[in-house]
Image 1: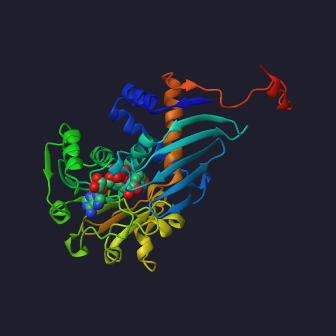
Image 2: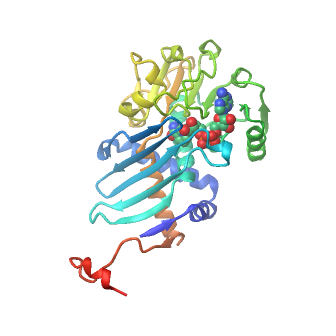
Image 3: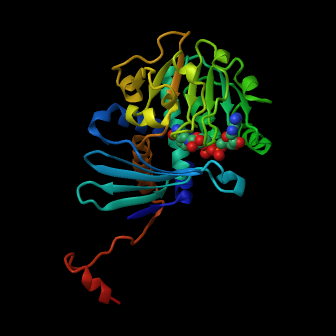
Length: 337
Ligand code: NAD
């Protein structure tokens, strides 16, 4: 069984190159979303506390079984901790033996951003050049970079009430975008945007902007609203938007649509990728990808990391599984030296 830690993951990305790794991840996600019906899919198991959430996210096909443990603790950054940390496991379906245990904190950000890009390819206007980033925390740069991989983005207007997060975003993105505009508030940041990403962390029903400020043609990628009681958008905007989700059963409980029970979901993302339903149909439509994060995305990034870390000989073998000489004599291990 292999341990692929954060250092090994960085090694994989450095060896492949950022751009190539992001493309391979996008391809892996597209391939897996295209064969949606061959997966065992279920909504995640969530355990809620007033200050955060713990989630277990399984997904498997005929060959591989994957699951992720992940938390969401929005106040963590005030004590120097990440809001979201995750660990994943990939196992062989035939024997049930684990193949890999890995860091999923970095891969969660990478797969969330690659899924955003996949959705934007179908839902944003192809000529979109202006991005608004609301919330400049851990996910933000991953989002901007992945979206720029599929859209001709040249400017980013960004806002976060935390000035240090704003400075960090600028430093990390300076070599990626020629036009970076720090803004004094959300309304200023979304003005004129083709694509809006909401990536805030706040465990409450927030309304980041008024729906009247959203102009026809805008694509919104809402990723911060991902738990019951944790949302970012004005509910009346949902009635005006073409809404796409990852997995309706989960999104209805956790996404923006939890606040608008009667609202129509246009499609699950896989239906658009497979061509069963249309993506954007006109330059005037407002599109919303109401993302909460789905286990299939973790499956895709884990299988890619397993393949690539094996190819590059990164990560290390660990002895987490006992190996008795006689598999029926587990008890005998107690007297082994
Ligand atoms: P983070 O804590 O690192 O950053 C969140 C940022 O939002 C902070 O800098 C905070 O100051 C800012 N913020 C809070 N209120 C704001 C407001 N009103 N306007 C602008 N900015 C505001 O969190 P993160 O790891 O970047 O995650 C962001 C959100 O995305 C979280 O809610 C997380 O649960 C969610 N998330 C979703 C997915 C998914 O697949 N949909 C995946 C990962 C994370």
